[in-house]
Length: 153
Image (cartoon, rainbow, N blue to C red; front, side, top):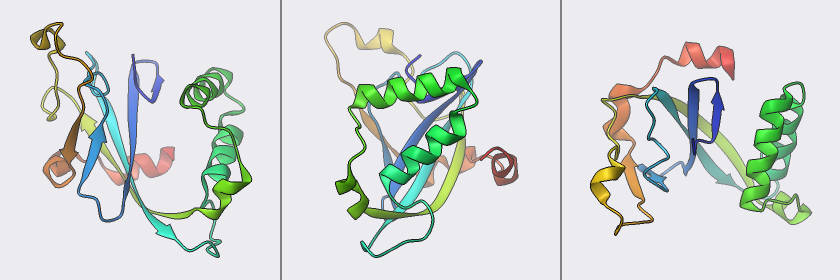
């Protein structure tokens, strides 16, 4: 399963978009493909000046916070570190110059009704590297209740 996170049969695909973007990039047709319902998580961020210092505002700080949060769950921690290594992230002081403010996070239920590419067999073997964009306004009907996720995150 090529999802960002999964716990049992529950899976999550996480996307980050700038505050002004109206869509999110789905990098491959497998990202939202599953026999089990899952979740698309869209976090909106705003680029801030280097002097901004309000909570977790850099990639390095977020990385450290996630590591600390997952430290008590070895399976999730190992999965996270494997994915971090796969994308080639290495903490670097230079990243601390780039600051962001998270301005919103929404969860969307991905099930058989959610708009996505679902049939890889119809592509044949001559098509590869499929990616597409999903319009955020178009998936509002699939938005999940905020209260449920505030307890989790």
